[in-house]
Length: 133
Image (cartoon, rainbow, N blue to C red; front, side):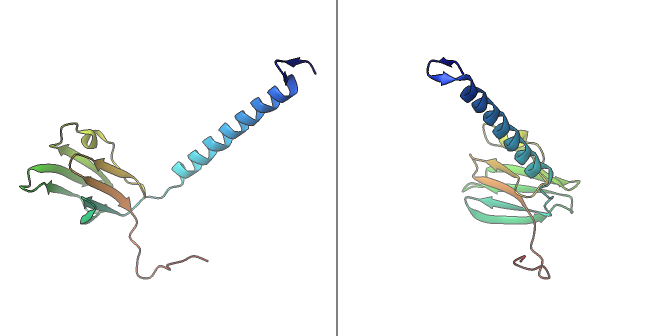
């Protein structure tokens, strides 16, 4: 084969095929992880790394998460229809309030200014095994 700048056409074609194959595999893996990630059943709320509360996604509620020394920082957590979201927040950027509702295991909503992390988890039941062999 003819070389151009020290690279043959065969090597160039093989590189392109390899890149396309890796992109397809990465996309398939990401789709698999997204599509088959199960729904969680509870929401863990931590403030400054400490557990603030655990709330069931199956029970509709509105929880006001007050932080700061005087309780002036507010994140209003809403749980409705098996999903959790921050309805309003007193932080300056409001990114947490703009986040879409979460319901899948491992999804989180984070409010950095208030140091609030809301994470969807699956509660481990007493009758379920710790390890699957």
